[in-house]
Length: 348
Ligand code: TXA
Ligand code: MG
Image (cartoon, rainbow, N blue to C red; front, top):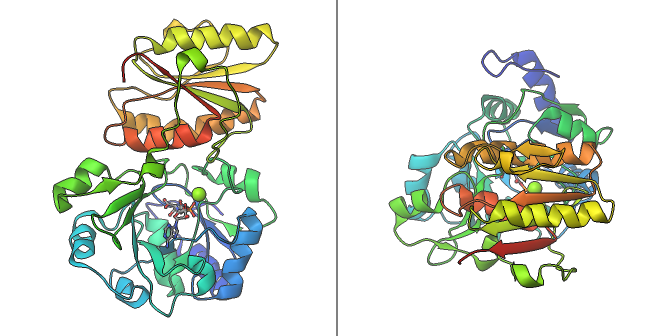
């Protein structure tokens, strides 16, 4: 069902909220990516999310709220750092890991002692949650392992027949999943980099770390780049992806080398480039993520272009890396996780 986020039809929201209250599944837009929502307090409804996405049951789900007060209901303890950050960044694309209260069903948290909570700013998301009157558990609305959906069409492609209603309010703003910050440890630790950056969090809290796994650094030197089998997939297209990161001056020539190699073995190849470098390629299929001078543009297009290459049936994607600064850290996290091979060129 289509919705204009500037002029929301409350009857559509009411219909979707009723589905939530009856234990059904609603796919809905947020400012980051589309979510697949169910009543977070209804264990059976949440199990349907796992089935629809084919998500392993040991992977916990974020609980979405429309009112800051709900955090005190869902969390056992709300540290002062959470209050500071909520004031500064909520509603918005920042998710907290907090100790859970007894109200949160085991299936939501995969039996962890913590719960992930986020308050989205997208008007459709917040209206849906407040109309339903319950917190909504929602992972990204893609099949497990695939790139997160940034349009309703992506949800349709992955989950048609599995969802009771899909709310379509157009393309999402950020195009990248929220930042996840663990506040149950010291110092607070980013488990998944996202639109709210490490630099912004440090400006508020001082000491903030990035979990080593969140950096997803799994690099091989260019010289040994052909050794395969470094599987590390998530957010992944069907095509096999190689990420070339490091010195921007050297990236295009490395990608051109890889391109000739794959052409030689009759693979169809897509190149994921940037405005600054796209004219350095002669390949037929070059897609421009955005400009390096505005990494937000790259974040917004990343998942969409990965899915486009899949629709076009390419075998191989060769992707350029960006500087892991600001939202670039989140872009590199997704690119690295989606790649089966990472090649670094130039100085570290
Ligand atoms: O932007 C977003 O966060 C989107 C929209 C729909 O809100 N949601 C989203 O959910 O990306 P999902 O399930 O695709 O990713 C949530 C991540 C998973 O990697 C999960 O393992 C982690 O959050 N997570 C959930 N609960 C957790 C917990 N209690 N402790 C640590 N990690 C947790
Ligand atoms: Mg996801």
